[in-house]
Structure formats: C-alpha cells, structure tokens
Image 1 (cartoon, helix red, strand yellow):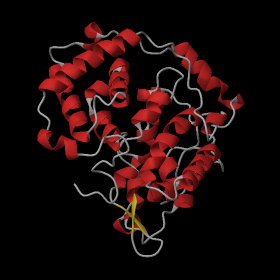
Image 2 (image 1 turned 45 degrees about the horizontal axis):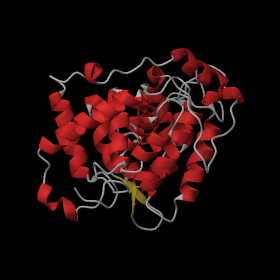
Image 3 (image 1 turned 180 degrees about the horizontal axis):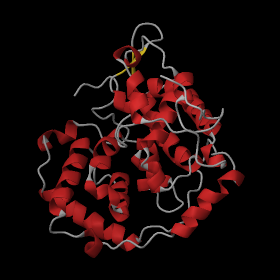
Length: 311
C-alpha cells in the first residue's frame, strides 16, 4: 500500500475504505498468525471531517480496554450490553454518518483490533485467537464488531434512556436475529420486543426467531404506523446532543449514560404492538415447540454465531 498525504492524526477516528480493509484481512490475519498492520492502514485512511471531540479515538480505546478488563473472567459476549450504550454515547453520530462503513473499519483495524480478536476470536495455541469472519472487522452493519453495537443502542434506546438497549444486548438472539429484520426500523416494535423479553413472554431464541419472522410476514397486511403510530423524533435535540460532545463527560462505567433527549416512544403504541406480537406468537410455528421447556431462556444465552457454539 502506498501512503497518501492525508494521514490521520494520532488519537483521531479516520476513514478506512472497504477495499483497503479487506486487502489486509488475509487468512493469516484472521487465524491469528499475522499481525494487523494498523499503522500502515492509518496512513492510507482519510482524516475526520472536522476537529470535534466526537472523533476522539482515545475515548473508544478506553472503553474497549475497560470492557476487556471487566469481562475478562466471563464470556466476551457479556460485554455487549455494557459497551453498546457507552459506545453510542461516546461516538455521537447521525444515522447517515453511522452508515459509513469506513468509520467502523477504522475502529476495528486501526483503533482496537485486539478488542475485535478478544470479542470474536476463538482461543487457539498460546495467545493466538482465530476470528472466523472477516465481517467482524469489515462487513455489514449488523455483523461488524462496533457498528452492530452502535446500531443496537440506537435502535433500542427509548429517547435518552439506554436501559432497553442494555436489556436487548444481553442476549445474542436479539442481536443476531432482530437486527436483520425489516421491523428493526420501527421504534415501537423494538420497545415491544424488549418489553416481552423483560416480562418473559418471549423466553427462548426459537420463540424470538418465530416472532420476528411472523411479524415480518404479516407486515404486508398489518401496517405498524396504523396499529401503533410513532411520534416524530426531535432531530434538533439530537443535533444539540451531538454538538455538545466537546463538553460531555466520559461515559460512566457503573451506571448508564444519558442519550439524546429526542423523544421517547408512545407507551400506548408499545402496548398495542405487544398485544399483537403475543397473538402472533400463539399462532406462528415455533421450531421444536414441544422442546421449549428444556431450552434455556433467551436472556444471557449465546447465539449460534457465538465463539464456541456450533450451528
């Protein structure tokens, strides 16, 4: 790779193209035999668009270090619920900015590649960790290590309250299944799913899969906007929250931060969708339904995509 004139300053989040990222994700790198050339990749990245503190990479690096420290004794997947809201709070993006894969590529390959290997790697010989999918470094938003967490926090937060996002990220079935469904774009639906998890109306991964697939299939005749209208978000409040990043305190480690106060979801809409989802769940076909009593609850369970779990 030939270095360009635009080198990203130390401690800043740049943009790394998909082509440059994929070029270094060789089998040797993914299997842990070769180191990721982070410095070289930083030299072919482009700088952030402005001097705002929201492009401060040290804040993200600190969060990754703290997550690995806090969850070093347990399964790395347990770090998702802690990290997602704090990543969203620290990296203040519009949804349009969050669709840029170049931002997530840079975080995964230039800022915290060791975190990606820790979170998604399978322990092999010695210190080597094998990451099964290049998509954890550079891939679709619902697969990439950091984008999936940011978007989960964005989708499941209820205004400034990150509690529903924390609940959602505690189980991998939500992250591995729900994020891929069209219904993910509708805020009342996200809140209804979280509420059903909290009330244990949905207890297993199979139930959640059946519910999301059934809701998607039924959406041709059931219009969410009619059943459970969503109020418009206050985009001015969101932009204000983004603009004050320079004066914001670091994300607290032992309590949830506050997100943008851009409007919560109507309680009536959430309850309406819950009733509809419960009705759907009673009629959709749940794979292996008679074995559900023996299946562990969805909360805290590893999805099929998790290290050490075979499909």
